[in-house]
Each structure stands twice: as structure tokens, then as C-alpha cells.
Length: 277
Image (cartoon, rainbow, N blue to C red; front, top):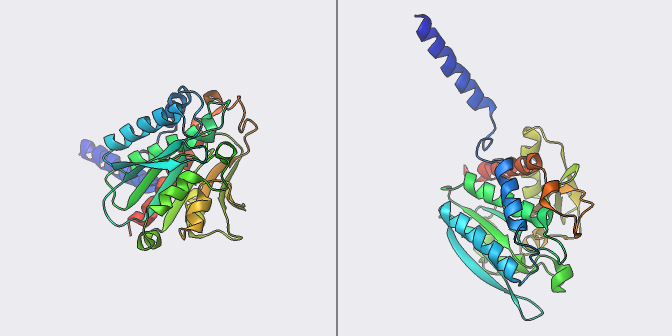
């Protein structure tokens, strides 16, 4: 009888833990994401159209295939005549959620936080949601306008051109993960004066996970701008501010695994809220 009571207590405790634990809490690893940041940064600077950007893209493609996604590579024409690339993973079913992170960086830096951090968390999100229908994840190229000389974030502009109007209308959550490993302020950012549906949903999930997150309007500083302008209300998920932005000190040792995990778990929770409907 005593053994039966112990077993019942263990089952009850496990059930309570399952209820109390947010969805995605065990699937996303900040430590694993930090290791991915270090691996990508070890390739060296990843200027759009460079060999290092392509090498990083192959790493992303290999992992997405391992997770079971249908992977496509989109070429992105650059003003200098070179080509960058988007690495896109899709799961079956009507598209409902888009999560992107830019793969390129500026010259003179290994671009650990900007933006190996976003790519690493995107891969954690892809791992956690593997087997779920309705998801597109992408490491997009040519985001850094300082390098490309374009007024557009060219990789994300190419991504949305490949989506029909009907497909764009079907998306209920779109997030760009950019600079998510360093900073003291957690922001959802968007073009609109008030949070759009992607920002509102993600802010709610962040707060439910005990994170202090706020909304900040911007003029379109990352890939969320091209998605939003194409009719997919998107938000930029970021930690601010990084004093090593676009400089040589943007190195892996500064990136915090805890912050990567927080952004990853929040993104998974927001995506599941859409994909489970």
C-alpha cells in the first residue's frame, strides 16, 4: 500500500510539472544554441555573397534536412553582381508561421550576435517544431544594407516574392530573430505605431514565460520590414543594446546562452499557439 501511495504521488507530481511547464521549455537549449553561434562564427566574416556565407548556409541546410524539413536554396542577386542565398525549410500543409534570421554579417567581424545568434535560435525553433505542419523557417542572406548598398533587405525581399498572395494571407505569425544573445532590453519591434498581430502574440507569450518584454516601433531595421511591406505583418524579436554591433568585438564569448534560450522558448510558444488551432 505504501509503495502504491508513493507511485501515485510521483505520477501526480509529474502531471503537475507538465501543467506548470510552458510548451517548448524542454525542446529549446540555449547551451546548444550558443554552441551553434560559436560554430558559425568560426567560419569567419560572412559578408553577403562570400564563400563563408555559403559555408554557413550549408551548415543550416544540413541541420534542417536532419530535422525533416523540405529544404530549398534561393539565389539572391546582389548589386555588385554576386549572389547571396536563402536557405529555406518548409513543413507540409498550408503556411501559418514564418521564422527567419539573417545569415550574413558585415566585414571585419565574425558577427556572433549579429546574427549567428538569430540563426542558432531559429535552428532550435526548427528542432522543437519538427513534424509540425504549416511552418517555414529560413536563414536569409543579404540583410546587411551597409554591405549590399541596397535600400532593401534583399534576402527577405526574395523570400516573400516566392510566396503567392494567398499564401501570404494565410500566415498568422511572422518573426525575424536578430541579435538575440546580448543586451538588457527585450523588444518586439515593428513598423506600426501599435504592435501588429505577430508582436502582440509574442509579447503575450514572453510575459507568460515571466519575461519583461516591450514593443518598440522602428523604421524597418531588419527582415521584418520586407515581410510586413509584402502584406505579412511581422515583428523583429531582439535583445538591445549591443555595444559591439558591427565591430570586431562581436564575438561568441559575449553571447549569453540564457538569452538565446529565452527567445527560442518564447518563439516556440507563440508558434504553437498558431499551429495548434
